Image (cartoon, rainbow, N blue to C red):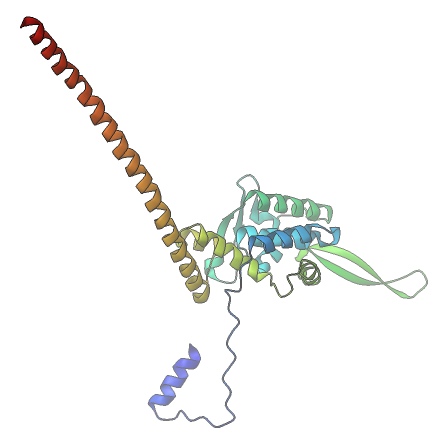
Length: 273
C-alpha cells in the first residue's frame, strides 16, 4: 500500500519513470494456504503420534489444527495463559491486536495441552511465566579430562524455537511433503466455514484474518450457506407434506361423525314411515 501511494504521487507529478532494471517486489505467499482432506488429516495426526521423538510436534499439530492458533503462538504460550478448568487459552501477545483473544479448547486440544503441561513440569516449568514448550539449550562444559563437552538441558524460562525437523520427517512419512504448519490454521478455518460458523465467531477465535483468508472463508461460507439452504428446503418440504397429510386426516375424521348422524336420521325416518 505504501508503494502504491508513492507511485500515485510520482505519477501525479509526472516523475514516475522506470528503466529496464526495475523489478517489482515479489508477491507475499498467500496466508490462505491449503486445507487437508479428511484422509490427509488422519494420516498426519496418526503419523505424528506414532513416534515418541515426535511428541512435541504431534501435540503442537493437534493444537494448531483444533484451535486455529499460529505456530508462533503455540511456541510462545506461557503456562499462565492456560485455564484447564475453563478449557480455554487466553492469548495476550500475538502477531496483531486482533490476536489477543480467548480460545476454547476441544477435547483433543485439551488432552494435548494437558500432555504438554505434564512434560513442561518434568522439565522444570513451575512458574506462571514459564513456557508450555521449554527451549532446548546446549551448554559447553569442561569435562574431567579437560576437553570441552556438551550438555543438553531444557530452559522453561525460554520458549522453544520450534519442531521443524520433526515436522519435515513426519510429513514426509505421511506422504504429505510440502504441507506447512500454517496450513493447519487454514484447515481449521475451512472446516468451520464448511459447517457454517458465523464469521464473527470465527474471527473472535482465530484473531486477525488476512484479506485473502477472509475472502477464502467467505467463498466457502457461501457454498455452505447454499448447501444449508438446500437442506432446509428439503426439510421444509417434508414438514409441509406431513402437515398437509395431517390436515387431510383431521378433515376426514371430522366428516365421519356427520355422515353417521345423517345415516341415523334417515334410519329413524324410515322406521317412522
